[in-house]
Amino acid sequence: MKKSLLLFLSISSVFQMKAQINYDEVLGGNLNTITTAVPFLLISPDSRSGAMGDVGVATTPDASSMHWNPAKLSFTRDDIGISVSIVPWLRELVPDINLQYIGGYYKLNENEAIGYELRYFSLGDITFTDISGNVIGQYKPNEMAIGSAYSRKLSRNFSLAISGRYIYSNLTGGQSAGGTETVAGQSFAADVSSFYTKPISIANKKSDLSFGMNISNIGNKISYTETITRDFIPINLRLGTDLTTKMDDYNEISLSFDLNKLLVPSPPLYNNDGEMIAGKDPNVAVVEGMFQSFGDAPGEIDENGNPVSGSVFREEMREINISAGLEYWYANQFALRAGYFHEHDTKGGRKYLTFGSGVKYNVFALDFSYLISTSNIGGTNPLANTMRFTLVFDLGAMSI
Image 1 (cartoon, helix red, strand yellow):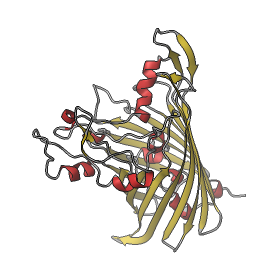
Image 2 (cartoon, one colour; image 1 turned 45 degrees about the vertical axis):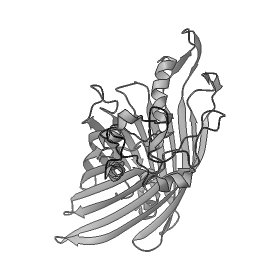
Image 3 (tube, helix red, strand yellow; image 1 turned 30 degrees about the horizontal axis):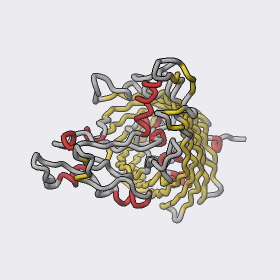
Image 4 (spheres, helix red, strand yellow; image 1 turned 90 degrees about the vertical axis):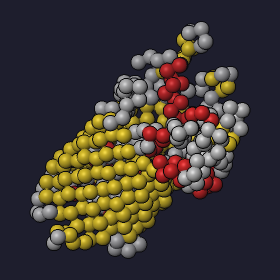
């Protein structure tokens, strides 16, 4: 599919735009989203979590745990697992954007495991034109990340993991933009994660209560030009819990709950002269930006230019996204899933219900998920009707 450069810039702005909100726009707590480069790193790649409202940091371990919480890998039941996923993305906006994901793990022994992942994000075909509309080139923008992790149990119930990741983002194919030469963006990042799970009993039913934490994409800023201007990558804090209860020999139910917060600076508030009047300077180092993100929201300003009491704390709380999910298994062969994702209107307004199912037979499983948007932007939502497909191989379950 051919697109004009204008459409390309409209799409790529989602990936690398800098938010600068003026005085009037923030009155009353209006839109003040946090934007980063390469947000494809946060797209839920697998159908299981995609059907459960994008929960995953504390769910039972599987072959996609590398994305959600690598510390879970040392608790996997099988020795080898592989998952292959495809996610058609933003199909309500553009028909040929998609994410492809391969994840997996290998258990070294009872206490140690290594994980790996490869994700490829394609933005389709772009036709570049000059100011007169003449075609000057064609390109397929793409982004990629490849990573690995080491997970180790420190006790029967607790594990830690560390991950490394290389990130590559080529949105322009070297085309010039406004007289400036563009280049592919590159970054290296790390994850630090933990997982705790403990068997308990609820109403005489065997249950597992789990907690997870993952700080992902801790890495250097990225740039698409040779200038000193660089953008944060999506450093993210994910906390969550999961309760899995075996009702009887055939029925099992899991309830999961996640909280997410970007650990990058919030856009400050500027007046019409470009002077910052609320919030903090976002042009800081990576580690400083992570700590600053817990208290740098500009809040709200009244008509007299004075800060509204309590508005900074309220905005910080609005930066936390909430996910909840439910999973039901019958005979460990058939699964039904549902979930809900909530993001505050002033931080992007993504709200959606998710549903899905899965079937497992011996060494392989097939999962499917479907997203129903509950919020619309201009009458439609680009995320509406998103589907995910995942094929999982539990090679350790093969009998030789």
